[in-house]
Length: 305
Image (cartoon, rainbow, N blue to C red; front, side, top):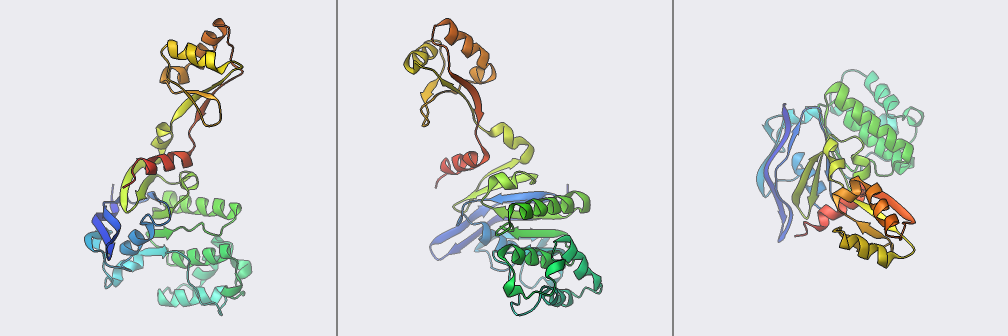
C-alpha cells in the first residue's frame, strides 16, 4: 500500500491550550479516512496543518511523501480541499467563481467547469450569484472548486454541512466513486459517525486533541456492544432467577432488564426456556445492538483526558 497522508507526532498549541497532541496518521492511496470528533476536538486544526495553513508547534505532516509547508506550491496541484465554510465571491455567479478557480489552477480545458457543475448538480445555478445560494449549494460550490483540477487527494472538513438527505447521499456516492474507481485518497472530518461509517474504509476518533481510536470500517460492527433485553410481569423474580443461574442482570434506564452475558445474547431461546420453566414467562425478549452514535460517545467518554 502507498501511504499518501502521513503525520509524525503532529501537535499544535494555542498558548496554554493544546488543540492537537502527537497525532500519528497513515492514510493509503484510494482510502476514505473518516476523521471523527466532537466540535472542538481538534479536527479542523489537524486539517489546517495538513494543508499548510498553520504551522505545527511540533511534529511533521507529509502528503505524497513530501513535507507540508506553505511554500510547497507543487504539492497543492494534487490536493483539493474544503475547510469549514467554503468561501466564494458573493457578487459573482457560480460559473464565474469556478472560472476564477480554473484560471488560478491553470486548467486549460474550459469544459472542466461544465463537467464539475454537472457532477455536483449545479448546472441550473450557473448564472446565480453565490450570495443567493442555499447553504447546501454553497457547500456544493466549494466541493466543485475542490474537484475542478481532478486532485489525487481530497481533504474535506464537514462537507455535508447544510446538505439535505438527498444531497448527503449524492455526496457519499460521489466520494465512494472517486476513491474506488479513480484512486483518489479522501480525508474527511465529521462529528456524525453514522453517516461516515456508510462509506469510509477506516475511521479515526480524535478527542481533546488525542487520536484515541482507529478502526477499519468492516470491523466496526463487531465492536458494538450487545445486550439481551428482558421484561416480564414479575421482573424481580426474573432477575433473581437469572442471577441465581449465573447471569449478569441489570435494570436498564428504560425500565427493562438487560443481560450482557455472551451466551445469553447468542442463545436467547435458552433464557426463554429457563423463565418459562420457572413459571415467570417473559413478555419481552430481544437482542439489541448498540448504535454507532452510542459507540462513539462511549469511546469518547472512556477516554476523557
